[in-house]
Length: 168
Length: 212
Image (cartoon, rainbow over all chains, first blue to last red; front, side, top):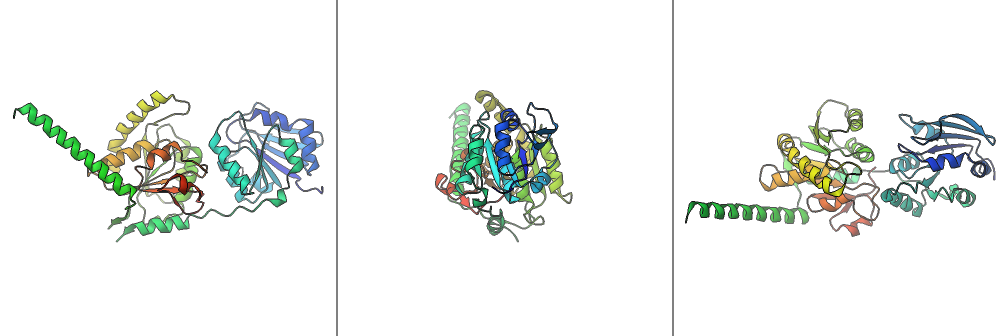
């Protein structure tokens, strides 16, 4: 495969996702990421147990940090985003029109977030997997097949509310 | 008829009248008659929940007609600091107020103690809502939602307030209503969902596309 996803941004949100943080640094995962073109990883690790800093592992540059006020710059700069199933993050990435792979944190049994990721995969806006299936998923999915995410539009609702609630 | 007999029958009559008013209002709400006509701008309350819910609701606020819906009053939980920052970023002018009420349920709180704390939060909310006198209440999630809406509904039963409740279900709910949604489908004048098939789950729900 040609060098497609050179810069990858990983984000776990405000909580922690120890399993993913440790897993990303292992050789098989980094090899799988390199096979889709990855050279550079920016990793927002939240409260996970790994230490922030800049690393070089198996030929991949990894920059780990805990939090930033806004991750929108990092999303914009990435060719591919790998994120936790948090609704806010998923929607932000899709609105930025970036290919997205969601890794579900099975330690958090927050099912209604999974519900959204599932539906967005059914509608072909993203792919999702767990830590266990990350490598095999990276091997089979084709991010170019994903559908662009339509923009949110509250106009219809606002028009309806304006017709029901009136000021004379 | 003795005095005590008179008093007890008076009480029974009062309770019956209140119950009839309550049933009447629920029927009005469920049959979907929610028009509201005002001569002044609409006093609007936003129930701020937590985290993602706050972001979703404030994105909606950015799109409304600020001249029509004012003053805007935000009710938030007393231990919620981060939402206040987000509200300040959303509101450009200063035509808004903040009111704080106790949180009805904290994360990981047990079922029984959350019943007690919800009751406490509800009692605390009565004077707050009565003073704010909202025409419309917008809410979209947990936290302050239930006490505010229950109080608004009871005050409406007592003819002390004439307001409409708009509940916007989170985009995260694809197949089923949240607990707040399940409760509020009987009190909210307008139920909004963000996935088309949710209109089958909740018979009153309206779908206008994705909002956030």
